[in-house]
Length: 261
Image (cartoon, rainbow, N blue to C red; front, side, top):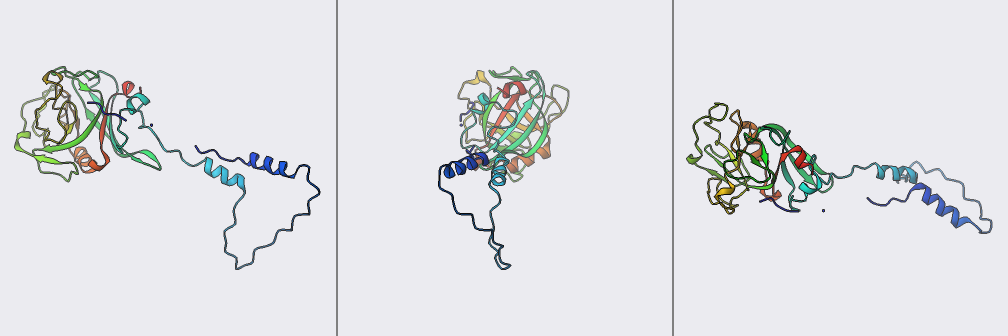
C-alpha cells in the first residue's frame, strides 16, 4: 500500500587569480596593459562585474528542497518519482488524535513548497499504527496515493474523479457524542487496501478484510475517527479543488517521529 520512489563546482576568485599568476611566472617582461577606455555615451552594452561578485551570487542562489519538510529519507523514499503533490499529515505522537495537514507541491527549480494549509485535522481514536488491522481504531502510517473522490453532495470542482452518491449519507454519533451527519458530504479515498480507480464506496480489499479499509479523508465531525483523517468542510473543499491527478498526489501521514525517519 505504501508506494515507492533520489552543487555545481564553482571556480572561486582565489583559484582564478592563482591560474593567472602561474601563467605570468617565468615569462619575459610583458608589455604594459593598455589603459582602460571610457565607454562612449552611446555604448549600451552590458559590462560584466567582477568575477568574485558573480561567484558570490551563484553561491547564494537558493537550493531546491529535495525532501518534504519534516519527512526523513526512509519515509521520503516511498514517495513516487513522478509525484509533485503531497499532503503531509503529521501527528504529535503515536497516540494523538489530532494532527496537522499541509499540501506541498514540487517545482523542478525550487523543490517542495507549501501550496495550501496548514489545516487542523483529526485522526483515529487510538492514534497511529504501521500495521493497521480492522477495528484497531488507529490510522495507518505511510505514503498512499490519492486518486478517487466522492460524496453525498455535488462535486465542488474536484480534478480527481468524483462519485456523487446518496450512499455516502451517515448518521449516529462519534466517540465524543458528536453527530456524524454530513461527515461524508465530501471524501477522498486513501489508497490503503483498496482498488485504485474505483469509487470510494467500493468494498474490495486486496489485502483481505482483516487489514481494514475504507480509509478516507472526510469532513470533520468534531472528534476522533475509526481510521480516517478529517478536515474542516471548507478546507476539504479547497483540497479537492487543488489535487491534480496529473501530479500523482499522495498523502504522507503518521506521527512526527515516524515521518522523520
